[in-house]
Structures are given as structure tokens and as C-alpha cells.
Image 1 (cartoon, rainbow, N blue to C red):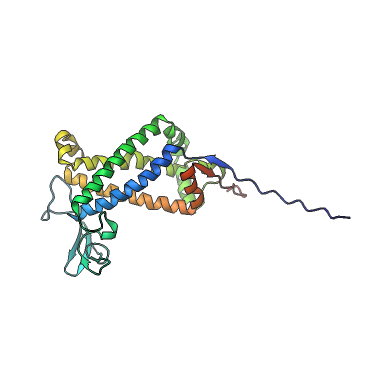
Image 2: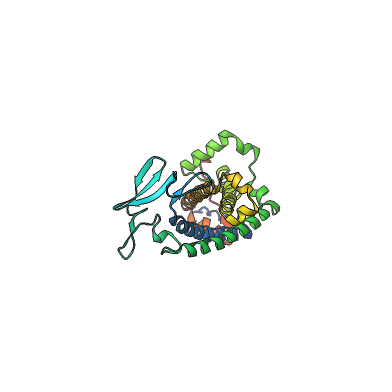
Length: 281
């Protein structure tokens, strides 16, 4: 008599949802390239005068709140009264040919890699227009196409301090949403994306315009808004590094949450829902 086979449980089939629409995916990858070029060309422009000031005027003899400089044998970063030695990284470093350079940022971090302020400005201004146009179109689509209401709108219950603190603790423990909750943005994602799209990127564009003498002639109110061209330059620099910080946090979250699934969803739009935890936690 044949022995009956033990029935084995059928593994649950993965559930896929359409998470990212085409405009989001296009803007995401275009923005990644655009911001990288803007950062690297911006560092080249910064190398021409590696000091930041508050107010309208700034020159070598004026008090600067941030300086990346060099001495005959070292490089340093000074913020206010705090000075940090940065030899080999900032201020004084050695290029691939073994030649010591005293630019603020090394060639591998700038566009172009050799010192060329004119080319750095050309790269920067071209991609600044790419950023401004793409951001405007994306913001319009976000508002009109329902992305803001469907995905980014922060609901009343999410503003609860207990809810926000719970999400912070879950992220700190690397306990990311599972099941259907993984297909929706949590409160931390919503606030960070809203901050980038509607605050940081517009701030970058506005402060960049404020540094242009031609724009100053047509819109002098921008100088009053930001407290002068040098203040606008300082805010522009701070906002740029805030975007860099967002990028590193974003990449870390993608790697921890599952890079294949996350990247695939930003390429095809389809996201595979992680299975629910058995303990219901």
C-alpha cells in the first residue's frame, strides 16, 4: 500500500503593487544625475573663493564664517572659531600624478577635474536650468496629478507625536513596514520628500538666482529676502550639503530595506510587498 505524501504548505505568492508612476520615476533618475553634476560643478566654483560670509559683501580680508584653506604644509577647515586639520582631503591634497594642490576640494570631487572656473560655471548654469524646469513640471504634476493628495499628504492622525516617535523608533531598530503598509510612504518619508521638493530645491534655485547680478537688477527684492548676495551664497552652500545628507540617508534606507526591490520599483514602477511579520509586530 502506497504511503500518502505529506501535504506541504504552499508558499504564499509575492504580491506586487504599482508604487511609482512614470513621472516620479523619470524625475527621480533625472534629478539624481542633475544634482550630482550641480554639486560637483558647484564645488569647482567654490574653489575660486573657498570662504563664506553673511551679508552683501565678501572678500579675503572680511570675516568669514567658513573657510577651507591651507598653510605651507597643511590644509584646514575653519567654521567660526573651530578649526579642523584636513590635510590630504580639503585645502591641501595630492593628485593622481603626485602633485600637491591647494584647492579647497580635490579634483575627483569637481567638474571639471582640473581647475577651470569658466567650465564649472557652464556646467552649473546648464544643469541649474534642467533642475528648475524639471522641478517646476514635477511640482505641477504632484499637485494636479494627485501625487500630493494620494502619496505625500500628511493625515491628521500622522501628526500625532506618538505616531511620529513610533516611526522614529521603528527606523532606529531597522524594523521597516511590511505588507500593504510598505507600499505607502510613512510620516518620515512624507516629511523628508516634502522638505526636499517644496523647500530645499526651491531654496537652492532662489539663492542661486540671488547670486546673479542680472537677476538682482530685475528682482532686487531677492537680495532683501536673503540678506544680501553673500548670505544667499552661504544659504545655497548649506542647502546643498543638506541635500547631500538626504542622499546618504536615502541610500542607506534603500540598502537596508532591500535594494533589489526598491530599485526595481523605481525602474519599472512595480513593488513587491514584503510579507507580514508572523508575530504581528
